[in-house]
Image 1: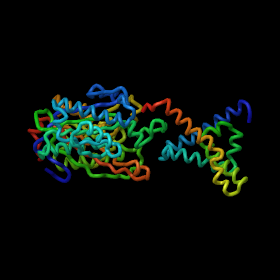
Image 2: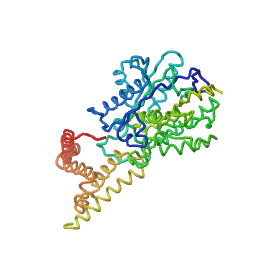
Image 3: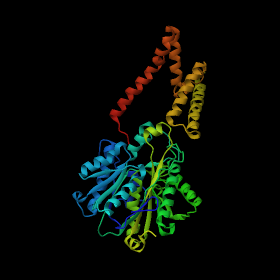
Length: 344
Length: 120
């Protein structure tokens, strides 16, 4: 049910039954390398093109998640997924392999939490028992679509992002699990007039802040109710901007505010520039790094705020500004759900 | 300009053209494609003013290797053909001198793509 202006509350608290993450070599070499389920040394994934590699990565992550849940693909009622390529092609091909009904979603790098929010909605409403949600990106397909292919040899400024080669998938459903989903806050499109594709972090920070503020207002929660608030891919440029903008609105997040794009790569990985981005960034870090902290009892709640820059190759080419969006999902331990999963 | 001084002037002039390109990259919001276009057009304008050919005589490869010389070649060809054939030469001459470079880029690009694969 809707609470407040932009937030959905899921009374049945759909459970996170399992997750699957599959990443490329650079992500595997990063600080979270050991946390991912599947790490591949070959960015081509043994395929003949980057696009085929991307869809293969997604298929492997989805397959892993389903098997970890103790299910077969036939048991999945619905797939909700998206990616960064035109017409969501990687999701479409992965769903062709899975052979299950698909709802394709797109909000660029915020796709993962849009998919999770919808998956929770379908389960909460009784329209599905098991939903597979996820998102994928590949550095080389994104470079080809939005920036410059490697062969072009373009220089990048330090504020540039590095699109993550990775796929994250999650199975939501009813059943026994340590983690559930209580709230989702659907973002509004925010545009602060940034037009440079090298300044994505700065462009997306206001969208993340708007969604975080709306979430806290709608749910009546405070920052202290969360062990961490993790943005999707603001990276090293956008994260301090978001912190500053939140402080201006009277929200003191302190060290609770983290960013998946910052967590993904080490400071020694220069080719990552300011940090990770892409639809695969947020789900990979969330599923492999953040949710295990809840499962282990270290954390009780985390608000994942996936951030998306909704530019298209055409809009960027025509010099348009970058419209941005952020979708937030609250993942909570079962204990936290029973104690405070109701809107106050 | 001959002998060792030609090497020095080629190094300095070629380097300075690259410095201009790097400054455009670092200090403006121009994309790499825009920077390339600015350099090509600059070379064309300099040649139109009669300044690029003296620069080549002074710096040799320092002036012919950077992309500015492509603009210079475009204008060189157009002026030469216009002198010979009149106003139509303005159109035909543009690619007169540069066709070798363009064709070579296509041919060698194709050959390289047969032998190598992008690493990402």
